[in-house]
Image (cartoon, rainbow, N blue to C red; front, side, top):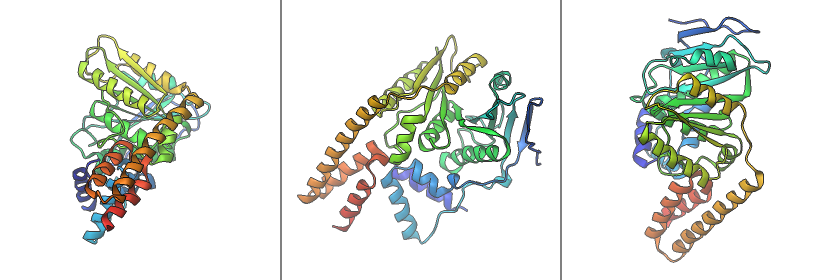
Length: 348
């Protein structure tokens, strides 16, 4: 998350007909609801928590410093739920352990169920929820991310769900948002469907979250890529994204290419294959994961030592440049040491 993106988000964060949603005790006819208004907020969707999970440590520190200097505070929540509407689909079959849930981040403004998805959701017992006015023209941090988190919170409050089968998905630009949320909220989402939109993780735009969350992402989140055979640019992006996952020890990854398809939302067959993959995750080999994590930690420790050496020798500019690089590359894995070193540089 670049400093300019942080400032833009700060400015947005400082600016400060109901449809019934029944709960079912068992099987019932499938129901689709539009213009649903929710009311329950979650601490996970607060501006402070979004910053903690989606910013790099130094970007979060810049945010705190900017707020202190301005004498202002972040608003608690970016979203006024009374002004928001959601689309909701509740399938006809409730699985014995409870429904699964698919939170969908769209590239369009409408809260609509993609064509042909209803029978697949019925087959697997998956509730679908999506927010209106959450398309590519909306702010990621000011709207799209908190709307997705609040959609999850409100469905959890209203329906019997299997907590191990709560997923997030998106199409195109919405898929990129879904990936960021899966990375930052692995304690909420157990898997993600990346439909024709992905990015590498571990950089200025998609920083790694705090260590405990990232370790959970590595060990318990399944990532499923679904892109059309003729969607060449997004297939190339998937290749780069998958390579970054492997570099950062994210091992439970599946790549599904839809034959003859271009840049289009997943068809029912592709959705079915993706849900099959999510519902049957393969946990990473613990020895392989441990070895991979150890290699990253060794690289990080060596780089941190270089910063400490530069500071000790009075080379503050070089130390600051290398520390910024560490923050971009390692994100939350480098904290809190990276934040302590940044504070030391400011005080010297």
